[in-house]
Image 1 (cartoon, helix red, strand yellow):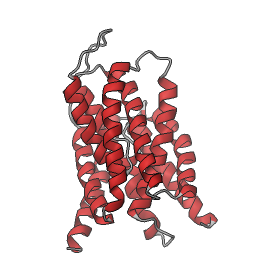
Image 2 (cartoon, rainbow, N blue to C red):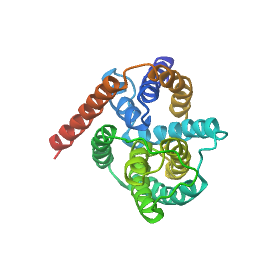
Image 3 (cartoon, rainbow, N blue to C red):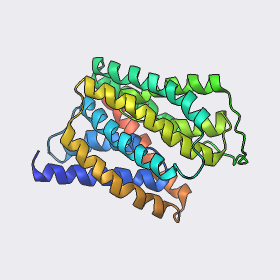
Image 4 (cartoon, helix red, strand yellow):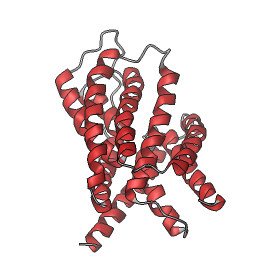
Length: 259
């Protein structure tokens, strides 16, 4: 890759990770369409859908690892939740990432399109504050089943699945907010291990673009998160929802045209 292409990737990765930090949603759901469509529009070397999922998988792996390290001393990493849902999401992500190599680019885009619509819906589900309590109780079986499903879908597109895990943990499993935020990072990190392993084994990762996106992510996400704490989150959510929904619509239109 030439310097222009590397700078473009860095800018795209920075923008996607900044937005994800701004509104508190996983970077994969934003970075996937940015990396898939924008380079081609700018007339530079475009990556395939499989390569984009590999790059996104590496970015999620590093960013969630950084998040877990940041939360490790807060006391909100719940071992029982992380163990039960983490094992399940890891199994799912391994299945999804290894099987993704057998899917066409169109099929991967379909799955992203579905996840994008779910992400928009999940962003606006009311999240009632649940009282922080020392003893956290939740349905382990239900949590494990949902984690496997999320892991399979996330493994296919290289995501960690945080944008689905967080509302599931808050709304369905009734897990306290601070425990959800910290533990979902750890679960997403575990999910990304399976995703990266599958992408590496099936040769879907291009390493130089992945490194560029990781560097951009580590710089941009904290900046976005800090600014997001002071911004009007409702307006930011609507803007992001419209962008994600527009991407999903474009994907579906492209798929229909190729039928």
